[in-house]
Length: 261
Image 1 (spheres, rainbow, N blue to C red):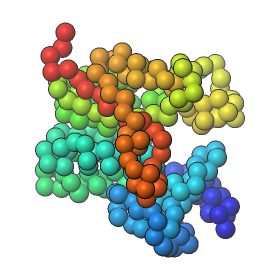
Image 2 (image 1 turned 90 degrees about the horizontal axis):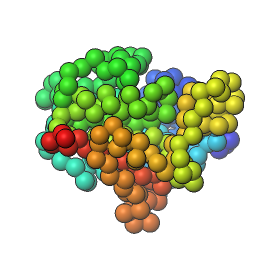
Image 3 (image 1 turned 120 degrees about the horizontal axis):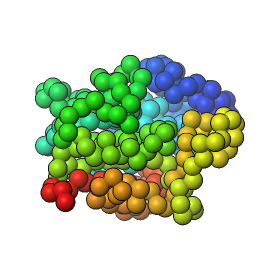
Image 4 (image 1 turned 180 degrees about the horizontal axis):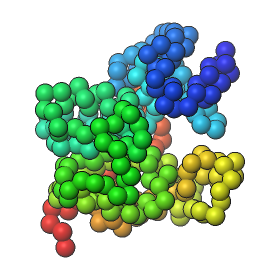
């Protein structure tokens, strides 16, 4: 049964999986009815979460109700417990909006229209459509920017980071996450590799252009940000890490200095 579920979930492209979430994924989730896991975004409880993964399916990954993955649960817990986002509701730009997070943000910002804006290159779910390497927005347009698992896809990640820095207000902050291989000291990229199968082998997905190493925080800082590399999952008890099925990922918080030099 587990193999069948993994096959179904990984055979569906992510956008199709999102559209099917209203019926297909919850139905599969009924096979995991019970207690032991809880999604902090939607509150659903299951014996385990569903398996999911592009190349090698990860057990205990996908929430059957809201489609939150491990990194989304960790990020939401950080935002909820460590920031004043919910109370202050700053101007927020959400790039490549993940459905699970977008639903929570839209509910949070429902009575302050225009302060939460989503953007993507193509997704019909987004408010705006643009290439993050050339953002058609004014300087200092947003107080907070959330941009996850995008930089590994773009041709010029340094340019994309400079654009995020530009549209962020002085004193603003953001979360910029990418897959990071902590066993690798330096980021590896090679645009001469064009074969999809070889790109998948080297970078983890056919549409990835690089795999980041432990220099990821330094690369963020090159754009002008002050960077906090926080091993946030390690701050939870073992019981909480199990309950929420959290990853060992770090949270990378970027801040734009109030006064630029």
